[in-house]
Figure 1 (cartoon, rainbow, N blue to C red):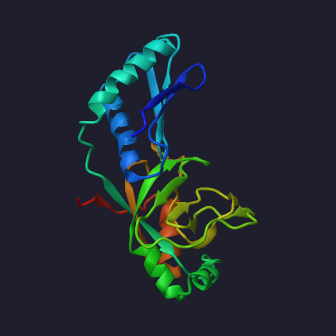
Figure 2: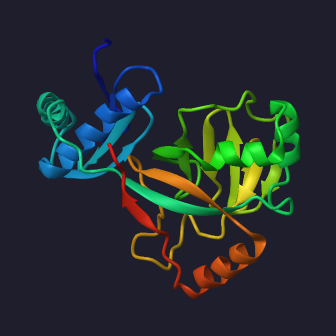
Length: 242
């Protein structure tokens, strides 16, 4: 196992890097250190940003210097390996796979040599782990670990796809929060907002949790969308079973 490395990241943050791989095992170390620091913060510590395999920790350089901040984090790494993480949460995401929204579904089915119904079943019957948020505010990078697709991103990205699009490649599936460029295949759309600045916590999802896609008809999609705009829709969530 490679040694955990702590690097300076500018004049007010440090980066803790674990093994150079994307896996639940490595990401659990990221989540454990984040949880440990939340429970036992050091003087001057600010927000933290988890990624696939690292944790960016901000600090106030007027309250604590780089070397001391590094020592504070290093001291917590040992206990992080023994921490019990909170029960993981699963959030249900309604997804419409109607061809109006799933513009690449037919193409995906051709690539995978399956029917469109089989592709929808593959995509919607697994829980997806939220590794991190990035690229755009609230943009979740999620992955399933069973039956991944065979294709990667497209050779020629689209200059703009609609916010709410559900995009896929391999075992990954992301929710696009706003209209933006994207090179992934669009498999559906959700009426819920991955980022909603009307709320105290604008992000629907957070690193370390799971999501489950629930297929909905176009009519239910439009009904949920109206509820979302009115601020009355709440996604169903539950604790994930071990």
